Amino acid sequence: MLFRPFCFILGLLLLASPGLAQQPARDFFGAVDHPTTGASMPVGSYAKGCIAGAVQLPEDGPGWQAMRPSRDRRWGTPELVEYIAALARSSAQDGWPGILVGDMGQPRGGPMKSGHASHQVGLDVDIWLQPMPDHTLSATERENLSAISVLKQGTRDVDPTRFGEAERLLIYRAAQLPGVARIFVAPGIKKSLCATKWRDPGFLSRIRPWYGHDDHIHVRLACPAGATDCVDQDPVPSGDGCGAELDYWFTEAPYQPSPPSQPLTLADLPKACQSVLNAR
Image (cartoon, rainbow, N blue to C red; front, side, top):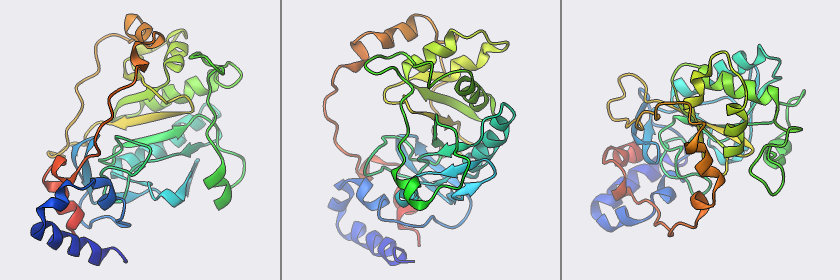
């Protein structure tokens, strides 16, 4: 294990040089290639935390294949790994041929060098909106195939040739499984779901419009029972989110540039994350 000595030495350096705690935390968490031992324990919040005792999703399973293995982002809580397996089983009932799994989290969670502000506590996973191919993908295919936007080019509305009943049912299945706190999708996807008549529309409140989710869904689980150091988000607002709240995402207001933010440092994370990082 190449990075076990690294973690121990890092701990000594942090004690001797408090200034290291001000360096980007993504550099430290991104350098570790294995989880801590012991029970799974998400620490902190989805965008400011870490995870002890993460487990790795296999590259292939019944009804799923994992993408971008070189990123080493197939780690999460046992609940997240079971969720993925359960979604593969559930979506198969509607004829979905299998799911393509994008990023979960790093071996010890924490901030990533690219791609996500969240995915830090092992409770987030990206599921592509393309069905799994009918063959086992090669290593090259897993690295080079791209998720495809389901929106009409130049608009915020879905393209019905890329997003239809099968994709809506996949999201319905994803939202109905136990433990789901939110599913982030492009506003046009939410709009399509709102325009569909559902026997049980209660799941719509968990479907939240957000930037950049036009080729995948981002599933976020609630903190597991007993995870006392894990910080849940506030409950979703009441209602289905299909009215004025959704209309807002079809104005220009949400897309105005934000001031640049500074990368998180170790000092920004819960104190327990330094112990998670330094564990052998």
